[in-house]
Amino acid sequence: MLALHVKEEILIDVKNLTKYYPMKGTFFGKSKDVIKAVDGVSFQVRKGETFSIVGESGCGKSTTGMSLLRLIEPTSGEVVFKNKNVLEMKRNEMLDYRQNIQVIFQDPYSSLNPRHTIKKILSEPFAINTKLSNAQIEDEVINLLRLVGMDVHHLYRYPHEFSGGQRQRIGIARALALNPQLIICDEPVSALDVSIQSQILNLLKSLQKKLRLTYIFISHDLSVVEHISDRVAVMYLGKIVEIGTREQIFNHPQHPYTKALLSSVPVADPKLKKLTQRVHLEGDVPSPKNPPKGCPFYSRCPIRLDSCNQTAPVLKEVSHEHQASCHLI
Ligand code: ADP
Ligand code: MG
Image 1 (cartoon, protein in one colour):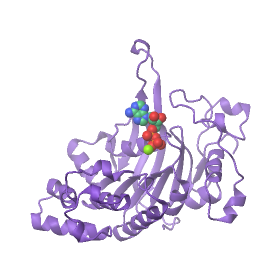
Image 2: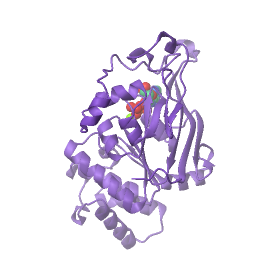
Image 3: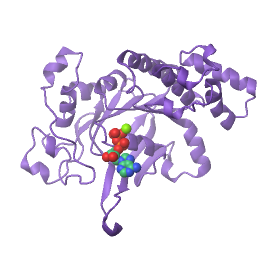
Image 4: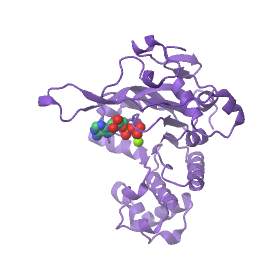
C-alpha cells in the first residue's frame, strides 16, 4: 500500500477525456445525437499505485480504459504519459507506449488463441518485439510461468485444458512479458468463483510489489475494489462522481451514489455497516443517449432537490485528495 503523504510520481495524467458514439439509424442521418459513453473524465495515476474505476455496467469504465490505450479512439481530451500526449503519438512512439501499458481482460479465453500451446502464446510477445533466440525465449516463458505460479509442465497444453483461474494467470503472464509499467485490469476476476478471485487478486498484489507495477483496476464489484485499491474513482453515466483514497471512499463516502453502491454490497466491517444507511438504488441508469441536463444521478437520487435537475454539479474538494460532485455537499 502506498503512503499517500509522499509526493508520488504521476505515471499517467488523463485530462477531460470524452468518447462520444454517433447514434445509428437517425432520421436521414442528420441527428447530432450522440451516446456520451465517457464525458469529461480526468484523473491522475501515480507510479506504483492501484487506481480503481468502479461503477455499474455501462457507466463507461471499459471505454475509459481502452481509450488510454487507443484501442478505442477517444473523441477528445488528453492522455499524458511521460510528458507526451498519447493521443498525438506517432506510430513508433505508440509501439513503445503499448509495450509499457498492457491489458488484462475479464475473459482471457477469448484472447488466447485456442490452437496455440501456452508456450507459443507466451513466446509471441518476445518473438515479435525482441531479438531473443528461441532458447532465450523459452527461458523467458518459463520465468513468466513461474512468476504467475504455474508449473512448467503446462507449456505444451492448450487454453481449453485450463480452469478460468489458470487461464487468467496465463493472461497475466502474457501481459507481463515485455516488462510493462502499467497494467489496465478490466474486470479481471469478474468471471471467477469467489475463492479463485482472491487467489488472482493476491497474485496481482504480489506481482505489483515484486515488479513495481501500477494498476488501473476496473470493476463493478466494490468488495473486489476494496481489496485491492489505493485510490478509487466512482463513475456514473460517463462521469466521475467521486474520487478519493480507498479509506475516503469506503469509510467516508460523500456522493449519494457512492453511498447507495456501498450499501448494496455485503461489507465485512460492522462499523461500516452503521455508517452507511441502506440506500436502495431504484430504477435504471438513464441512457447515455439522453443524459439528463442537471445532475446525472437525479432520477435515482434519494436526497435530490428539484433544483438538482437544473445544472450539472462539478467535482468539489471535500477534503484533501477527496472530491465529489453533488449540489448538496
Ligand atoms: P462499462 O465498462 O462501465 O460497463 P462501457 O464503457 O462498456 O461501460 O460502455 C459505456 C457506454 O457506451 C454504454 O452505454 C455502452 O452501451 C456504450 N457503448 C460502448 N461501446 C459502444 C459502441 N461501439 N457504440 C455505441 N455505444 C457504445
Ligand atoms: Mg466494461
